Image 1 (cartoon, rainbow, N blue to C red):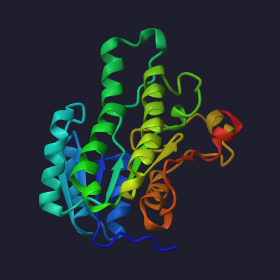
Image 2: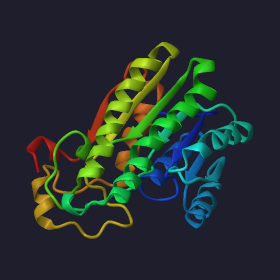
Image 3: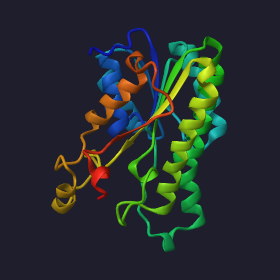
Length: 250
């Protein structure tokens, strides 16, 4: 199956590094015009420079915790690249603090980026660009921590809560915006070997049926499928990508 996004505009949050960047690579290679949103200006500039040789890519710096700024960024993207066909929300904060150590500020920081911003980004994109055209596809980033409990130190209460919220925001968005021909799905990765990931414990890998953690490109492949017309009848679903780890309950 050859999945293509020729002529379509894709917005990717957290697109400067890690899984977000892998999604950007895949979307550009498939013909999409890509808007990268990230908080880190230096990483964003490097990502745009790397990808520009392959297609149309622009960067937009934004602190997603400042939800009041989201609408303006989406308006700017529409002016510069065109109406938005795909929204991929890969930005997020990973924290593994023990529950007894989580402060109110830390709780709010994780929730604001991982779930609050996810909703208001969906709201801005659908209201401005997708609902008027009765078309669009959204892929959010949940986590296996959002669909099941996790043993410390693999996860934490605020991270799990934020990703559980993403699961329900995805399902609610699918229900409410289905009448507008907007599909809303999510991926729920397990452990992923990004550039910041230290070598995983061998014991952890042995608990995974495929005996390894995922590569960012493998998560991006699932994202591209859900975003594409190949998944035209799929909405409100959470695609777990974890090498089978959740099947055995690691």
